[in-house]
Length: 363
Length: 236
Image (cartoon, rainbow over all chains, first blue to last red; front, side, top):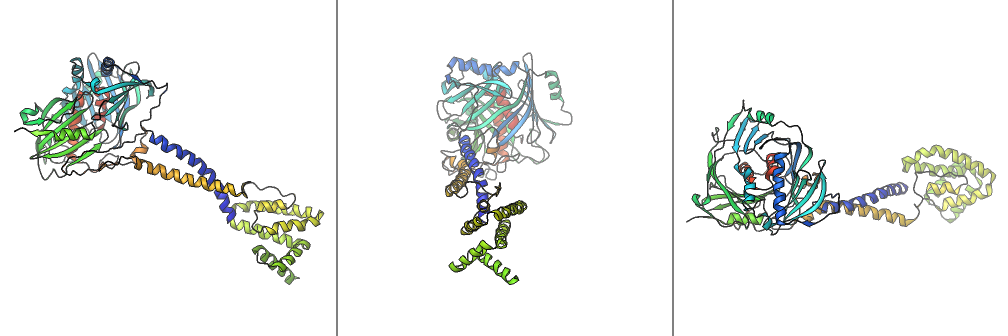
């Protein structure tokens, strides 16, 4: 018996030795959050203010001139989602198709600011006009963007993502009211191929990246637009939104963090009752849903945005105040006398708390 | 004669059990010295014992027959030395079969029956230490994610099951400082998966509405828009 025990000990000892070495290394590797493989020596080059703006504009423009096909993956603590992307450019038109590969099947088509979302399972199509999509360049050219004032940018080095060579730039917030970003842009065109959102301690909250990418792919804009128009068999819904502003709605927003500017306010119908299996409610008001009016006020500092939703307080539905973290997005709910406030944003929780607490009813 | 062989067997088995006192021990030695049959019996006792304890040794029993015959032939040539070696074998009753085999001339080494540094106690120490280290490293790597979460008040729970699996190597940690003063409760974040368990469907709608308007961000094109289109919950 002793001989057997000794034999097993030796085999186990060899294994244990190897295991101990491997496991000693593994926690260290795990502890090294946001590890970036650099193919060249890391150069921490600060980018000047002017070059930050130039570089951001380049990023923004890249998708206007570069057709591609790829698979996009978003991962965070709440899970992993991926989608297949077709992107075509024709003149000054950009046409895009995003087909989700995880979760509910969904096909989102975008033609400049026109967004059409197909939900095959419930046979519903949502048509929207997202005017905010084109706003950034205007913001930047008008000098309204305070990005260099609140973020410092530094070039970290080079890396290889989805088969393309990319530059890595880190946008470090200058205060603790914002999240940081690490952005990989393809060297030749400036197309963003990977993006990490970092919290105040530098840990990665969320990562969105191409897992495979084919640049200059033969994508036909005309074909995508055809697919976009094919709504036979679908119920078309066009959520109506009325543009308004906080003051006229009777609200004062005093907790706006520095650098954040009010962008827009909308009064929108949002389904109040949970969505029925046959499809969620739209402006038409499907059977069994009650439409409520919600005010949405949007603030942005150029990189991050915060939405404040205000609706009438309903004790049956608005049960618990609380905070929730979903990847990079934080949410917070709070009751303000007769109103229920929900704050949503890609900012650290204290910033969101400031926004929510600073909302006051005008006298 | 049969009773004598029985006696022999009893004597040898008592010897193997270490149950002989001084006088009987001397008698057993003499027995082994003069009786080749007794010696063969003694060896077979040990082979049987080893095979019973460790089944992988049973394979070498085949070789054992050859080795024994070989040894007997050699012993026949050098009978006076046999007694001494038998004593060696006996004084270490729990000796490793390697040792026993080595005690007889011409025994071949039996691979796989134990390592050469077996008798030295310090290697057993090293083996034990390595096992303990492996165990410690295992438990450390399991506990490390839990330890790393900041101990902020009401830190929300995250499903860590998703984190190691994430190929991107994310360690997403959410701490919450400064909750609303109205004694807010924190709602736990549900784990990875298509359906987020605890979330309010109404909240999903608001999230979708929020993502719709993230277009003012410089990062919206294309990464931000793609991220929202990939991510958003369409429960509008």
